[in-house]
Structure formats: C-alpha cells, structure tokens
Image 1: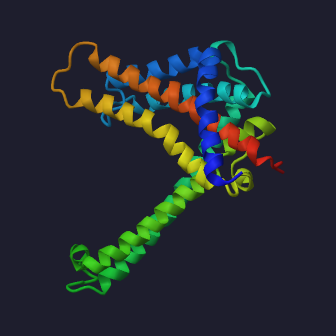
Image 2: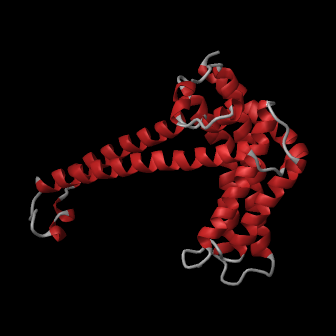
Image 3: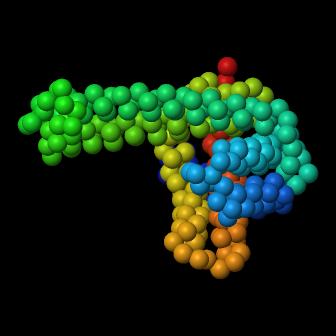
Length: 265
C-alpha cells in the first residue's frame, strides 16, 4: 500500500474507532475530560497554583486509564473494564512507556539545545562588537545572516526531534500487544511509517486541539466570565481531547501497528 493510501486508511480507521470507543469506554473518557475541565476551571493548572503538578498527574493517570482500555479494545487482545475503567498490567506498561519516552525525548532536546547554543556562540564570536568577557555583547553581535544560520540549525533539530518522537510512538500499541514494555525496541516497527504517523496524527489531532485551545482562550480573555462558563468551556475542551483525540489516535496507531506486521524481539 502506498503512503497516501495508507494515510487515508489509517485516518479512516481512527475515525471509525471513535464510536466503538464511546460505546465501550464512555465512562473513562467522561471522567478524564471532566477532571481536566474541573481542574482548569478552578485555576489549578495555573503556574502559581500549589497543586498544579498533582492535578496534572491525576489527569495523566486518567488518560492512561482511557488509553489502556482503548488499546485493549482496538487490538482485541483483552476486554476493557466496565465503561473503560480498569487498572492492570496494560496501564502499568503504558505508564512506563510514557515516562521512558518523555525521558528519551528530553535528553535529545537537551542535546539539541546545547548544539544550538554552540552554533549561536560561534556565530556571535565572528560578529561585530563581540567581547568574550562581556556576555551582554554576545546577542548583539549576531547579525541577520548569523540568525538565519542559527534558525536553520534549530529547524533541523526540531524536525529531528519530531522524527524521533514518531519512531517511538508505536511503543504503546506494541507494549499492549506484546505484554512487555516497548520504547526503543518499537523503533523498527515504525520504519516507513513516519509520514502516516505524523500526517495522520495532525489530521486527527489538529481539530480537537484547535477546538480545545479556542474554547479555553475565549474564556481566558474575559475579565469576568459568566458563572459556570469557565467550567463549561473547560469540560468541553477536556472532552474534545479525551473523547475525540484519544480514541482516534489510538485507532490510528493500532491500525498502523497491525499494518506493520513485524514481530518485536
């Protein structure tokens, strides 16, 4: 199957999976979406809120519960719990995949940042007015051509990070299907699938995220929103993410994993 046909088929599979997900896991998706909305309405996610990390952990944990039930359903190996609520080996494996993937990408991002800094210093050192003993002169020493060089380096590194994220994105599906944690070990499965993963992810995830950002932004700019409007907007945004983005993305990745048809070690 060529890449455009595979993208079309994978996106279609993600969309078709959403109604099934709502029939079998509606409780978990509602709970996750409304928890996000409630925390946001109370301002718990604010940078100054003392409980923001705890609230984020709760929402992420509920997202893992939703994803665990949906992967069970999409891959057909296990049955999800009542209304999609369960916690077992699948959820522990997904939690491990999430943590290891975040660690791996964070290390890559840190290395990329160091490289950008090195290029920026090299460009600044060749510019007019650069004095190594006075860091305040470094930024002004970078001219337009130097900024273009640093920008190109940053763009290439950003593309590399996105590509690396796509290469390990099959970790969740592989971990559920094989019954063991797969992160870097899932890298071979995504060979030749980076374009379907990225384009399919954008097509399925773009509208829910755009809708959620629009809802939250529309309420945030109001000095004194109507009572309950903040909670309504937060809940609607949460349901767009938990009830539309999560099931369609799981359906997409499950379809591509089955299409890959490669056994992992």
